[in-house]
Image (cartoon, rainbow, N blue to C red):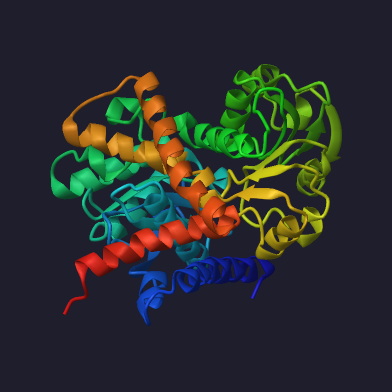
Length: 426
């Protein structure tokens, strides 16, 4: 077993442990928490495909439905070489909790293929996607399971998912997928939604400890779609971005990084923030990128992949507030270290829920054959994030719970209440 596979198993163990802790805190009746923890179904599929040179190759993919008690399964499709069955299930658990915390009528799902999309041509990715979707047809549908983009996928991949599914049923079904192109029924505001939610979560949690977003010093690890939008939106609200990191390394500027200039460099061909000339390079490569965690700041936003912050890195963090933009960026040991150091952590299952919230709004538009303007969509995302924070924050205030446990308690309670009301068949 590889180190990566062990990490995925530990991620699943962590997800299940946090749900079990929430169930114990709630005093759930015997057997109910086990029902909630267990995935409803997990499908492993074989994906044979032709490479551009005519040779045959083979991949493995998964799609997991964790909980569908409150509505159709909802979750992204991930293309990454580290994808495993256990990772898919762990991420699906997170999606179940997110939709419950946000009070969306959806369940939790996740899917993925163990592949490096950067090593594939666009034509190969299309053939892989279509074959993958054809294997999932019995699982998918606007009332069954609605995929969305995730790591390694984008709106173009979602367009292929939409077309392959629609071809199988004989008519276009826009609501079968979210995060698709605007021209095919996608929603304005979807691209920025997760980053917008992360910034709103930072603002709301910061206000509870007297930390205003305006004037705060922020460090962002990961400059993909989530991290880049978080940087832009935080900067627009008066925050100073003092540190950025991606796979190429990390940069620091105590006076603040010009985010617009960084974006301009990327449009001009830069491959990493270290090529932006907007700060001192404090680390190069993937290992060097971790140097950004030690930068003195008020808010840290890990927005890359899971398990980025371990116990050792947690001892180096100088932020007052950590807001998880990625899924599971903190290991359980890192969580314990930060709790002991009284550094507040806003967990992923709330902090990055802006994405699934906007996906829900996209479905609403598809079902009603409407198209809302971007301002209206953004306002709805922020409003729903604010409402969820009020529900979430009542638990730490009333029960002295850390946000991590409070979020798990709120999510598990919402799902458990739904199970009780629906009953058990037969």
